[in-house]
Structures are given as structure tokens and as C-alpha cells.
Image 1 (cartoon, rainbow, N blue to C red):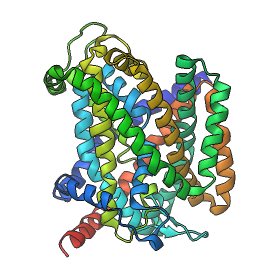
Image 2 (image 1 turned 180 degrees about the vertical axis):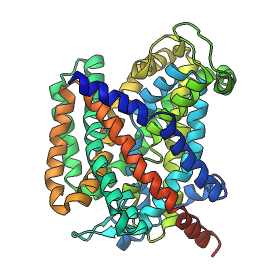
Image 3 (image 1 turned 90 degrees about the horizontal axis):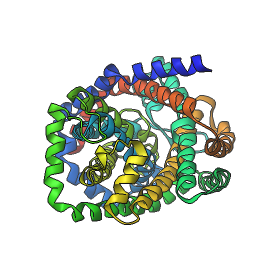
Length: 443
């Protein structure tokens, strides 16, 4: 077991090393330039399309808004709380700047993923529209590439049970036990029942719940953060200055912070940025493929907002609170650092983090259940759906009760493996993304 743990650790370090991070960021840069900065120039149009709520009900399973909320339900999670804190602990305040850079170019990646997801989706045996990287690999690149789509689906099926299931229920269990003394068994049972009630209703019910819960939780978290930020408003400029200067010079040791070079700021900023918004991993397009739309570009405009909201808004709130309260020099890391910062910033602020972790993890369980189910369906067909949902609920209870060091590593490796087929497809199908975008904007 120790040997397996060591091998997975080495494999994870390699997969999420400079080569993969360069590829993920590089594809984002390439698509951004190829699209002539459209994801930046048309962000207002994206929000306008989201607010308009226009849907072609005979063209999909959930509204475009619900598709975005389903995607956000899977991305807004521990990465926004623990991931940001870890990035600052390992890379210094400058890591936040590189998270922003990753998000800005990741918007183009998410845009391209959503465009291809809608363009190349299929109708399954139940008459439901399904899609994602495995489908745009098969239908966009041809049957000869179906093996690559199979690999994505295989990695996605396995990764879902780690990062999207047991890791999440374990985080909730740990947070509730630490702060309120709630038994992990009780947490696991309640979570399993609540998630089961939602996912047994399929993507429509997931879309409805995500469409209501995600905006509420995101707004509540941002408002709590803003209260702390405005209470320390005079230091905001200094905090932002620290982020920008540290991004290019590194951060000296201070207090309990051990110091970090510029290279560390880049590495951990990019890595945690991608971990948070999942741009390039290929997960979000699975949700966008179910949208009630017949226009790939319109859904792409909405899809790219996920990266903007997740990283440039929610992650930024967490980062500013950590810096403004001075908690980043405490020597704490992960969720403990975020909890400390919010607790120092406002009376009862630690409960903002606890509540955020619980709700974020719950919605992540919903979003990733759909991702994993679609991946499994691509391999085994629709007959796998009911057994998969039952196994998903059982895994939630298991995750709440056991130690997950090995699961974390395995999920990390599978997530990295998911990105490779998706990045290949995005690069090879980029001419399609550019063409349909021109046709939409200049018709």
C-alpha cells in the first residue's frame, strides 16, 4: 500500500508539473488569440444571454442558465476556499495574480468546450441529449479517434468518485465534526439521502436544484466576504499591490509564512486556478451539452462565464479576506487558513467558511454525479445509469467515514489524465470553434 501511495504521488507530481500546466494554459492562450479576444470583448453579451433566459425547450434537457449553474455547482467548491488558501500558503500572495491569468485565458477554453459540446452532442437511447469531450472527440475527429474519447470517459468515471464524491463528503464530515461535533456517520447518511433524492431525478432535477442553490450560496459567500473587505477598505489597495508585486518578485518570509519565489507563485497560482475552475479538464461541457439550445456559440458565451464567476469573483473574495486580515502570515494552510481569516474578519466568520464548505461540497456532489454518469454511459450504455446512481450514493457514505489520502492521489491522477484527451481535441477542433464563432458574430 505504501508503494502504491508513493507511485501515485510521483505520478501526480509529474502530471500536474510544468508540462501539463503549460499545456492547459497554452491551449487557453491559443484559443484566446484565435478567437481574437472574443471571450474578453463579449463578456457583456455572455451575461446578457444568461439573463435573457432564452431556451429552445425541444433542443435539450435543461435551460442554458441551469446548464451553467450545474457546471458551477461542480466547480465552486473546496477549490474556492481551501484551494485559494493553499495557493497563498505555497506561492505567496502573487499566486493570486497567476490564478487570475489562468482564469482569463481559461474563459476561452471553457467557451470552446461548450461550443463543441453542443455542436457534437448526440441523442441517447432514452431520447436525451448527451455530450462532452468523449462525444466531440468521436463525432468531431471521427470514429478512428473514438478510443481517445473512451479514455476520457474511463478517466472521468473513476475521477468522479474521488474528487467529485468521497473527497467532498469527507470534507463536509470533517468540517461539521470539527465545528459542531456532528458524527461522521450522521453526516454521511444525511448527505447520501439528500443527494440521492436529487440525482435519482436525473439532470432535470439537478438543474433545478443547482439553479436555485448555486446563486444563493455564491451571493451569500460573496456578501460575507464583502463585509470583511469593506471593514478593511483602507488596506485593499495595499493588498492588491502585494498581489501584483509578489507575482513578479516572489514573497519574503514573514510571520509564519516561509516565503516563496516567483516560480512558486506561478506554479501554484496556475495549478490551483485550474483546480478551481476546471478549464481544460473537460468536465463542464458535459453539463452544457444538455442545454436547451440549438446554437453552440450562444451556449459557449454562457459557458465561459463559469470561469469568470468561479475564479475572478469567488476566489478573489477568499483571497482578499485572507490578505486583509493578515491571516496569510499565520502559518496555517488550506481550509484552516480560510477559517482563521474569516473568523478574524468578522464575529462568527468561521461559520461562513463552514457553511460554504458544506453547501459547496453538496452541490459538487450533484454536478459530478452527472459528469461521471455521462462518462459511464458512453462506455456501458444507458443500462449503467441506475446502478451508477446507487453506487454514487453508497460512495458518499463511505467517503464520510474513511481516510482518503490514497483516494485524493488517485483522483488527482485521473483528473490529469482527463485533461489530455480534451486538450488534444480542443487543439485539433479549434478551426471548427473559430469558424462557427465567425458565422454567429458576422452573419
